[in-house]
Length: 239
Image 1: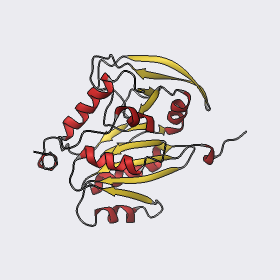
Image 2 (image 1 turned 90 degrees about the vertical axis):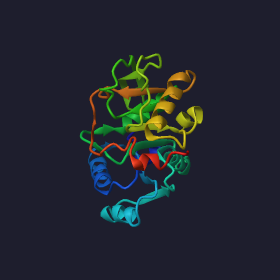
Image 3 (image 1 turned 60 degrees about the horizontal axis):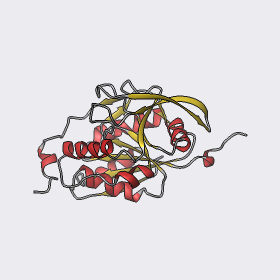
Image 4 (image 1 turned 180 degrees about the vertical axis):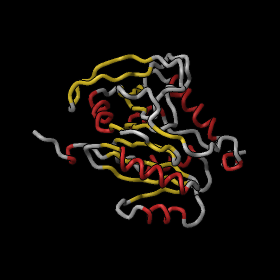
């Protein structure tokens, strides 16, 4: 029996942004080329109050895509993403990506969904490539899924490196945040990721993070200038 798109759950593609017009357009173009999913996808932009006209110029560039969006008022990465994920909570899967990660190879989203359907104790699949996050312990396992049997690697929470979790591109099931909670708000960009990474590593009973067979090499070009510690970052931190 041939499965149709409607047989698969919808995946929401959530792009987190603040005032990076050139970069986010490159991100969207690359996703259109490299994002491979059997089912339907919904496009969403999570914007932290970019300058007037920003969202309109992006959506006008891609008239064939029906975008939804949420906006926070310079509240920082955590609040911006939390609002978007709340808006998208009716969709079981969300692919979260920042506005300056440009895919440079194909992303097998179908297998990521199939993995989390087959393994209820996995709640996230990282697609960024874990090279650079050294001293992570990986456990090679096999899944018997609707797309057949395949190997994948589970990231051990007892790894020496903190970043079992990363803010880099990933696919997560709603059970991920149901157990780990929302992102911290009112802190810097770096502290947001660090605090949440500690939470993921320390909560042993919550769903695990995995990568697919090709998940070690980097899959994205990081084209944006980092805002960690910048004035744009500092203005979102609660004093």
